[in-house]
Image 1 (cartoon, rainbow, N blue to C red):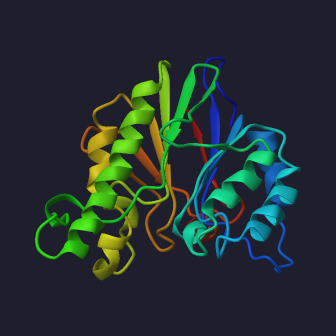
Image 2 (image 1 turned 120 degrees about the horizontal axis):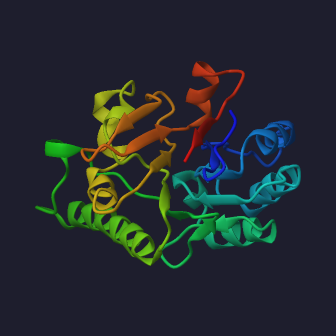
Amino acid sequence: MSAKQDSLRVAAIGDLHVHQNSPETFQGLFEKISQSADVLALCGDLTHLGLPQEADKLVKDLRACRIPVVAVLGNHDYQSGHQEQVKKVLRTAKVVMLEETETFRLKDVGFAGTKGFGGGFDKHMLTPFGEEPIKHFVTEAVNESLRLEVALNSLRTEKTVVLLHYSPIAATVTGEPPEIFPFLGSSRLAETIDHFDVNAVFHGHAHNGSCEGKTVKGTPVYNCCMQLMERVHPEQPYALVEV
């Protein structure tokens, strides 16, 4: 894909699930991406158990990447309670960890992101009613949406890209069992996105979901989960979108 002079080629992939003792390497993949894209977006679940040693292994592979890298964490990266150490390790490789106070700009494209959370979609969205654990669950989804809003508000760029781990729409989790939709994402994220002029949204998490969809406003959303991309595009197991 040849990019227009004023455009940016974004390669996005999620759910690498790097194991500490796995012989698998992503060096070849990162080398290939460096040849076809201007920036690499990592959409969470970068590690399998959220261990700093797993992040170290990923960082070694990222040495093969010759373009800027932006990322958000996923639920697996929180598993062991070492998410701050994981982020610290990734930052040693100059990976920009997108959070409410940290964004990234390349050319005139701004990148904002957050992990996101569950809660369900559209009229099936969970509401903060009843037991305290339910209220806490919904509050986490609301807070993640607010973090994204803060990040998007801070950008002053012509174009905007959003990175998430959880999905903001039901369309890109379609293919998963409907019973687990509430744990795959939340429309609250889409509501925040549609308050802004966003050009593209990338997420992971739904291994058996669908590749593309749109928010109510029409913003394109791409599920770039590696397990899905390997089935659909085995020769190119990542999303490559010109923004």
